[in-house]
Image (cartoon, rainbow, N blue to C red; front, top):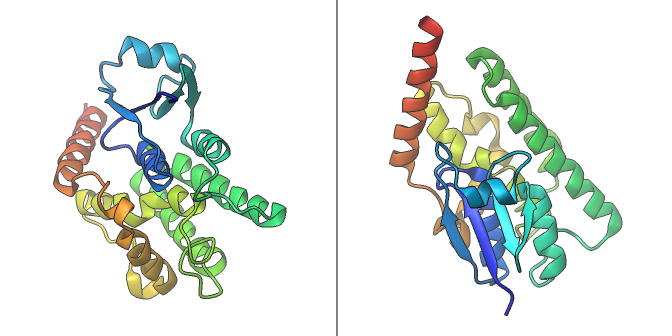
Length: 217
């Protein structure tokens, strides 16, 4: 049997994308928790370019970057597909995945006002373009890779709001997004594999306090 290992971090939404994909497909794997302040030699060996998680190791071969990993998983284990078979639908899904990844990258580390603007733009696009047509999930009735790409909106954003004491996502303004979040978090694999909200809050609060302290010095 093929040996599958996943190097991740308990708070990383990108690592959870891979966890969910493996579990949805019923693939057994070994999980290795990384301390990103003291990265292991194995992580640096497997991902010498970005030195980040997640890294999937399949039969000794490393695959890096969550979106690339999910596509690899979908090709190697075709059961419970994460991307549509139709070429046009597949291209549309990949477009939305890139949109989500680009937006999340832009909001990382930005000043608060600019970051809030980016979050609101993402929510508006999700509401007005990506979730139209009465769909339960981005791809229809079943969860797919696009849902996983937007997962930070479904869970991590709420913790971020608590840390910065600011309401960004107002459900009445984004009813389709709100319904999608409920549907997404009701899936057993998702519900049973999410980071502890209190631990997340403490981690993000500490990080924010350190960032603010460094700016004031």
